[in-house]
Amino acid sequence: MKKISVIGSGTMGNGIAHVFAQNNFQVSLIDISEEALVNALKKISNNLNRLVKKEVINEEIKQKTISNIQTFTSIKEGVIDSNLVIEAASENIDIKTKIFQDLDLLCPEETILATNTSSISITKIAKATKRQDKVIGMHFMNPVPIMKLVEVIKGKKTSKKTTEEIMQLSQKLNKIPVEVNDAPGFVANRILMPMINEAILTLQQDVSGVIEIDTVMKLGMSHPMGPLQLADFIGLDVCLSILEVMHEDFNEKKYEPCALLKKMVENKELGVKSNIGFYDYSEGLKMKKLSKRFI
Image (cartoon, rainbow, N blue to C red; front, side, top):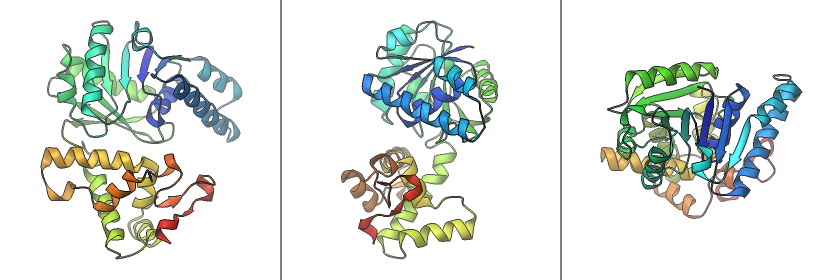
């Protein structure tokens, strides 16, 4: 398995492309937007520059990594002869099933089709194809080049062979794969998102402030980052989408997104990606300060 295609060049897509390319895989990065692809390559280059500066890699590895990535605005051209295609598009079941329908027609029979979905059923996505045994979840964590975990999620018809191949492949990326059965939110987000939602509800009900809530969780529970800051890094729109999927599938009150989260997404206060969320990132991540909304 040497040729990998990644669909979607956003935060997760470019991170996944970066990791595969740095580990000597040939990567096709696919997006309908040429501008998005240009921005993705800039992001990858900037991340590699930081690794060079920290002496984690050298200039030769950086240049080799960049040369391992080709960009495409056509799915058909980008998946030719790929051994594995990883979809990292929006967290929307209709978008994902349409992509997988297309991939099933365009890719060789032996190609494994993976999704980086945070919460949507692998089994549902697989039903859009005629190769359900070769459909699997690869849920990378953000930021992909740094975080070690990959949730490897089996659909009901995912074969043992496919699962073993993806577990072994993840290890070749210097990641730690964890095998998970298909369920809404899997393990990571089933536990994490209700906690983030409860933290936002605690703020909404004026129990305490942004910094205070994050400080309690960092100092009291040894979390490296408070839940509100973490929500900013994930993206409040992504948090909302995941909670909505789990709320619909489980039909339990604890997964219902709170009003403040919905309102912030409506206002385009999405966290780091929009430079404003619970914190203000307009001067960069190292210069974050409390959002004026919460002062």
